[in-house]
Length: 280
Image (tube, rainbow, N blue to C red; front, side):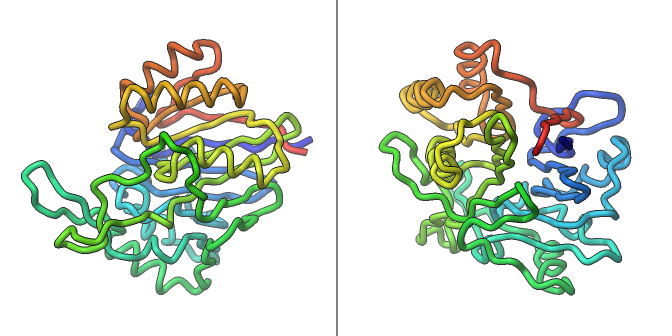
């Protein structure tokens, strides 16, 4: 039996001496002798937190991007600053322009920053396009696009493909990563723009109905209605998830609701937090 260890390098909150928070998300995954980075945050704290936490970014084997927003891709150029060949996994739509509408009705670019896009396009290893589920390494899989089937998860939002904000961004690049363990599946979310319950249902289908052991990361409930949060909690109960670590874009009301509903299952999600699971 071996263990997979996950360290949060970037998150909206931080705990511990010398580490810093940033609106974004990044996981360092040590799995079967391989080192995988899932997302890279905005890029402002990735390297410093890695150094403080003893994470050797220069030994990276693979980079997986959950989607193309700046707070998940901004540190990609830093992560790829290595002499090692790094396999890069992302949906091609992650490299397209992305915009949102601000409170004063002006457009703001929220896509992948140019240095990150340039580093990915100029990488000596070709981009692995996650148009479908793809095993990154044995037992660790990127979902690719997630079918959107629930009737209560609003998977839209103020996201657009043009600076005139007339073409809605369907965020087909949204994906998550899941890990096989003897006791069930561990799910690592970026933002779950496809809906956290849609994501978990899809992963259950991909794993022949195996139980969901843990769900970690952003659930994009920050602007969710009370009814959507209530329905999400109902679905988590049905799934019988053993551990929940809501973070990043989950939002305070939803996070409080989840901790209240599942006081014995919820754990903190912050920079410096580590998780460890046995893998077969």
